[in-house]
Image (tube, rainbow, N blue to C red):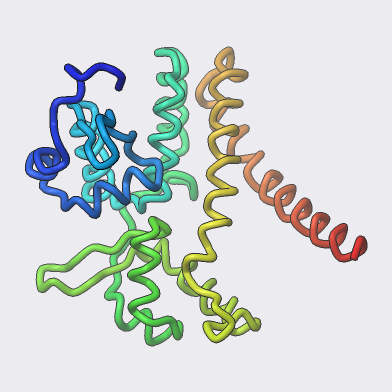
Length: 238
């Protein structure tokens, strides 16, 4: 936002209107989920209605669709591309054809966090850190106990497996190191969405959905092979 009239709320007022603490809003800005305010000094900035609307959207996606911040960031990144009405309509219709597949599932089952941590061998604090980083989402049951989506447990298990493979906490390896993988995949994802919306608009949604299902395992294989090739090239050049 470039005009003062569009940025009318100070941070304190933004917190009051959204119900979020200052730290959470700064975290959203730092992670690219929320645009920065209009700065009028080193420690002074103003925020507008678009910030309130964006925060409300983030909270709806978290609370109603149980999306972790990494997925919300991808959704917001896609929205920020300003797709045409036709492109947005295509993506919505493609989604309808993917309902029931591994790509579009119903709200995941929630499991108590503590038993999962004990079984997997990862501490509760580490999982809470993963949630802070937006790698997964934690909710509370009626008694205030933390829960994790069943669909996110694989990531907790992966951290444990990396530890067992030698990347131990003693060596400084932890949840924060998983961010580089998320950031890399997020960049690929945004380009994938652009490819679909820009090049396949002449096709029917059902045909696009079929292509997406067929292409996904091939893309996964490409990513794996390219990663292996990068490592092999690096080791060979040492």
